[in-house]
Length: 93
Image (cartoon, rainbow, N blue to C red; front, top):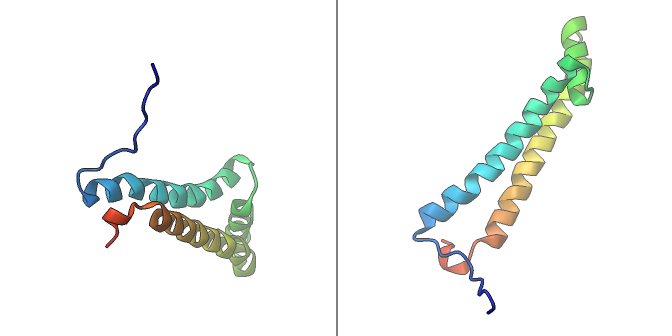
């Protein structure tokens, strides 16, 4: 006997939007909190931020902060793009 798989049925668009919104938010928060890893020696853009704070050097600080901000914005835009493309036509406004 074959198991029939069907697409999930959403009761209303609020349920669908709620189900999709947390992914975008968590991805952006992950990018922001990944910079904290520099405090335990994991490196990344957070290392530049920590060094800039320690040396009171704004150029070094911004060399780490600007790429992190741009990356967070790009990820948010990417998730927004996929959210728009994957939303069923019946739920689009």
